[in-house]
Length: 168
Image 1 (tube, rainbow, N blue to C red):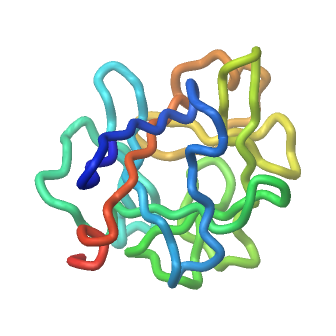
Image 2: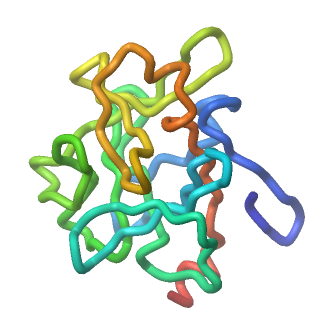
């Protein structure tokens, strides 16, 4: 849910159109989002600076932190990198199995893919069976055909207002 002066908007990767995600051209000009995993119960994604990993917790953050802020840098056609404000402008989501902050040139390029008519998932642009998934409270890379029907890759993105992001 995005709170603006005039409206409230929910952006849900599984049940919405791709154009609702605002892709950024750089870290410096990023549109920032909070990420929720739509499991039962809902989990909140954040970067863990101590481990370099992206963790999911059922405890909602009480205040915005740079570790809760994610941006999608790239575009719909060529794919995008997922950056976290706390991990800095030289790192993005990458790795194998458990995803962590890796140098941009080693990070995975992602794409939003429409499955079964209305569903969108986040898939590795260069590996059609590789998806982002929640695995035991860790943001993970899952290589499996069931990714399009499992609840783990179901995410909701909540846009952070520029005012809120700048305060951080």
